[in-house]
Amino acid sequence: MIRDNRFVESHLIKNGRWFSNNKRLILTVIKCLVSGLLVFWILRGTNLKEIWIALWSADKFLLLLALSLSFLTIYLRALRWQVLLKSKQINAPISFLIKSILVGIFFDNLMPSIIGGDVVRTFDSWRFGKSKADAIAVIIVDRMLGILALIMFSLGALIYYSRTTTDLTALYKWVILAAGVVILVLWIIFMAPKKVTGLIDKIRFPFSEKIQKAFDKMVNAFLSFSGYKKTLTRAFILSVILQASVIATFFIIGKALNIHAPFHSYFLIIPLAFFVMMVPVSINAIGIRENIFVFLFSVFYVSKPEAIAFAWISFGFIIFRGLIGAIVYAFRNNLDMPKA
Image (cartoon, rainbow, N blue to C red):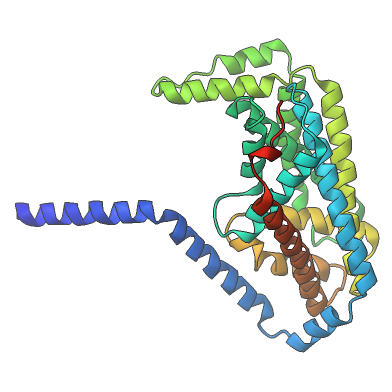
C-alpha cells in the first residue's frame, strides 16, 4: 500500500512538473482550439463566395488610404508614450519609440505566446535606465488613457443610439462602470490628495516581504506622476486624437467594402469590438474578431459576409504592420538604444 501511495505521489509530481513546464504550450493549444471553433461557428451557414466577392471588389485606393492612416496612429501612440516618459525625466527620440511600437505589434499579433507589445515597450522604457516599476507604470498609464478615450466614445455613441435601438442599452452599466474605474485610478495617480496617497502607502502584506517591496515600488512609481496635470491633459488629448484616427481608419475600410453604416456608428462599433477582443481566450482575437463585428454591424443592417470581410481586412492590416515590425526587430540591435 505504501509503495502504491509513493507511486501515485511520484506520478502526480511528474505530471505537475510536466504541466508547469508546458503551461504556455497548453494555453496556446487551447486558444487555437477556441479560435478554430469560433471561426467555424461564424462561417457555419455563411456563403463563402459572398465574402470573397466583398473582399475582391473592395476599393483598393480606399484600402491604401486606410492602411496609411493606420501608420499615422502608430506615430500618435509614440507621441503619447513620449509625453509620459518625459514626466519621468526620460527624453526618448520619437523614431526609437515608433520602432519599439512596431516590434511590439509583431510580438503582440504574430507570436502565439504571452509576450505582447506592452511587454516590449515596458522593456524598452526600462532600458533608458529607469526602474522596472517606473517602466511598467508608464505603459499601464499609457494603456489606460487609450482605454478611457475609447470608453468616452462608446458611451457617447450609446447615449445617441439609445433613441433608436434597445439592443445595446444593457451595455450602459458596464461602460459607465469601466469609465468610473479608469477615471478613479487616473485621479489617484495624477491628482489625489496626500490623505488618499497616505492611505495607499499604509497598505501592508504581512505574509510576504517580497510582495510588500514590489507593491511599494509600484505605488511609488505610479504616485510619482502626481501633480503632472499638464502631462495628463496632453496625453489624454493625444489619446482622443489617436482613437478618433483609429475609428476613421475602420470607417474608410467600411467605405472600401461599400458598407453603408453611418460614420458615427463606428464610434460605437470599434470601441466595443476592441474591448471584447482584449479578452485573451483566442490567438490574436481570431474568431472573436469575426463574431463581434458580425454582431455589432447587424444592429446597422450590415450583412454577415460584409462584416466578416471587414474583420479579415482589419486583421490583414495588423498582419502587415506586424511583418514590418518583424523586419525592424531583425535589424534592431543595442546601437538603436540611445542614451538617456
